[in-house]
Amino acid sequence: MFCEKCGTKLSDTAEFCTNCGAHISSSKGEQKETSKKIVDDEIQLHVKPTYKFGYMALPSLITYAALIIIMGIIFGTADSMIGIVVTVILFLILSLILGIQVTINKKQYENYTYDFYKTKVIYKDSFLNVSEKEVKYKYIREVTMRQSFIQRYFNLGNIILFTNAETGLGNGIFIRNISDVGEIYKKVKEITNV
Image 1 (spheres, one colour):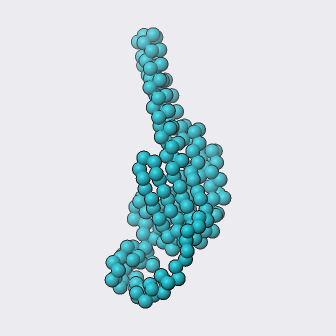
Image 2 (cartoon, rainbow, N blue to C red):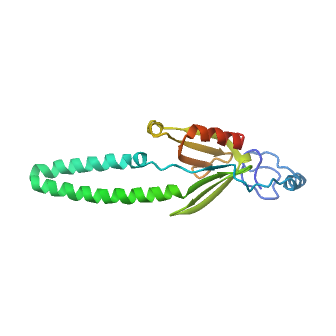
Image 3 (tube, rainbow, N blue to C red):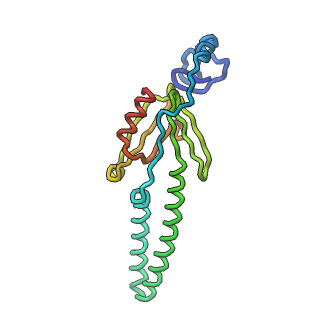
């Protein structure tokens, strides 16, 4: 059982919330609520993050280019042939690392899903780490949209669903790098009614 006011998990026999002190509805009220269950098996909105190579690889490309330039300068001052060989080897190694990184990130993004139903949102990740999280709309206290300068350039953004029992990074749902985030944000606000 959860507190209707703050969303804290409580024992089934609790009369008051241990977190906020709110009075918990009687079991008769709960029975009325369960008898009015809504059939909630139809997806209202399906959201998937967008993988854009330029946006995802940009930080790594800048870092790797700086490393190659610095190493080329350091080894190039001692002996130009050694500098060229070291720079080429470093370039090949960093290209391989970037290729692996891009492949894993792309596969990860393909496996993120956020399904919005009538009363809940379900997040699933099924690639390296398999996880699933369900949040009922009645526990969502705020829905926000954020876009960094670089995300705006790539037409991406983030949507964050904050829950009532917000105590850390594990609570709520963070939907990263969505295309046309403004439109999706409006739909999420409408569906969640927050």
